[in-house]
Every structure is written in C-alpha cells, then in structure tokens.
Amino acid sequence: MYAIARSIASLALVGVVASACGGATVTVGPQLASAPASTPEPTPAPTAAPTPVPAATPVPSTDGQGPEYVTGNDTHSGTGGTEVKVGDVTQVRNAVIAARFAMNDPRASGTGSGLVNLDLRGGVGPEWGTTRLENAEGSWTGTVTGAAWANGNASDLSGWLVGSGAYEGYTYYWHLRSTDTTGKVDGIIYPGAPPAP
Image (tube, rainbow, N blue to C red):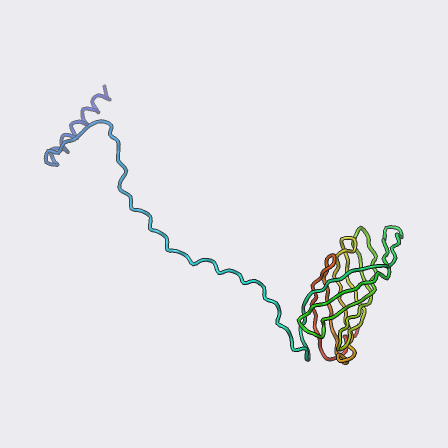
C-alpha cells in the first residue's frame, strides 16, 4: 500500500513539473539514457624524436710526438711453453706470444713478442711475463702482470715499458685486455722514467 501511494505521489509531482514547463510532454517509465556528447580528448602535441646516440668515434691519430694517450687493437697468437699440473694449480711457463698492434700513435704500432706465465686454479689466476714492441723507429720493453680467466684464453695485462731508439727517454704504460686472439690496448706515452715500484 505504501508503494502504491508513493507511485501516485510521484506521478502527481511529474504532472506539476510538466505543467510548470509549459505543457511539455513527459514520458514516465524506463528510458534509455543517451550518452552526453563528449568533448574529444585533445590530440597530444607531437614530441621530438629521441636524439640518437652517436656511434663511438675513434680517437684521432696523434702526431707521434711528446706525451700522448694512445689506444688501438692487437691480434696475437701463442705457441710453445710448458704446462704442468701441481696440486690444484695448472702452471703454464714461457708461452711465446706473437702480436701485431694497430694504434692511433705510430710509436705504439708495430709487432710484438713476449713470454707469458700463468698459475691457473679452476681456469683463473695470475699472469706475468715480459713483452717487447718494435717498429722501424724504436722499441719498447718491460715486464707485465695481470690476471687470466677462461683457462687462460682471456686476460688483462699491463706494464711500464721503457723506450729505446727514437723512443729513448720515454715510457709507455701499456694496458691490454684480450679475449682469444684479439685485444684492446690503451696507455700513455710520456717523457721520463717508469714510476718507482
């Protein structure tokens, strides 16, 4: 009964509103509501394309005079030497290395040779030896030390090499990081002696 009375009151209210609106037609009952007209989202302003990262450019060639940062690549191969297992250490002694260096400074380019020793434990260990780099103008010689991994097929070696010939009175700090038969070389050449140990 309460529901019927409420429905009648609602109809009466609709009639009052309709007559107040100037006799507009009013439909009572369920209706499908149409979606209000929507304002389209503004089109985002175009953004600039990301600036591409430039490819690394090679370090320019030096004039081959005075102090310089030097960088380049090497190719190398190893032969000979002895390999002995002592406990858990594989001792490699006097492996002969032959290399060719292509550097941005002519003083650091040329052919190289060296003797390398390793003490490998589980495929990693210290590496040390001697190296010589030479070209038509002079040579660099010294001892090198570093680390080896991948059973000695990869290494990181460095040393202070003393110049002779046209490079007399200069020192070449030489740093080689190699894998298999190629490597990346960085260093500096400067007038003066190697630092004291």
